[in-house]
Image (tube, rainbow, N blue to C red; front, side, top):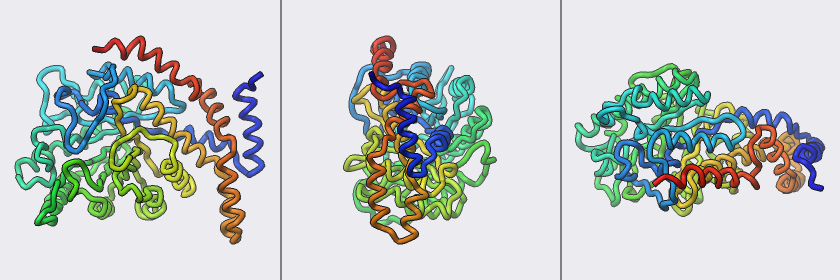
Length: 420
């Protein structure tokens, strides 16, 4: 007879306790973490302005799995299903292109909080926090590949006003939901080939940023972050918003830096940046993605890169200073499943990090017993964390991994497969 999850959990708990790990405390800390789910996974980064246009600006979504959400109610229904399959309480991350208009659509530089009233009402009714992003792509004024660093002052002014309004909307979202809204800024600006002058585009970008962040808002309502990128499609040779520029600018302006796991060189460790940046930044935002060969926004899985990032966050005692947002989109598989698989992978990585016998590892390291440290690190890899995860799922009344897809298949049959 198969043991029930609680009995297996108790045996696993005893194993961890022999190594000095408080499993109940680890689960309690895991419950305090809220992931921010990307709304754009549900509709392939199309938004509600011109959904037939599709994404551009260095963004490529592959696949055409049936059942894409076509409007706000459908997208919110899919998000509700995904959230119902995740233990804990989480958030939803919006892009400005998901505004909903009851009459004539407003251009990006004319967006107002009421264009997101549907999202606010929904978030309040489900006790969800919301995060927000300016959408500086998939627009005629971004077709040349330049926005805040564009050489044309009129186009720069358009995008400056857009981001200003997005920050104001973020403030209202945070106020209405009672949870501070993180507004993140990413722009696609860059060049496909070598530039004769790299300085002036960045000079224009800094001037635009100064105009955008001239006004500050209460941090309990909204917080700002800036997101860099190594390169993009159509910006292989030069990106105006590089890591070096945004790192310096964020420090100067007291903004958060956003580190996207897909926005660095494939051999560069994003995890290593945790301990390097925490002494200088009160808070850091991470966009969790999986880049294969380039920033390909694959669904996050429980791989070494994710595990190492979560370990570094936990080892630094920085869970309360870190914000974790999923940032990927995959239209080759069921979109609700993509949300759930990715979010569960992050929570499992955090759980494994929280179950690490950190005190004992530190004792070995500080005493110079490097052999013992290595041996214990290898021992940890085989510990029964899976039983702890299954118990966590049962406690929160969500299905374990092996039966999770059953519910998604039913939802597909009854809901998403009927969308034309």
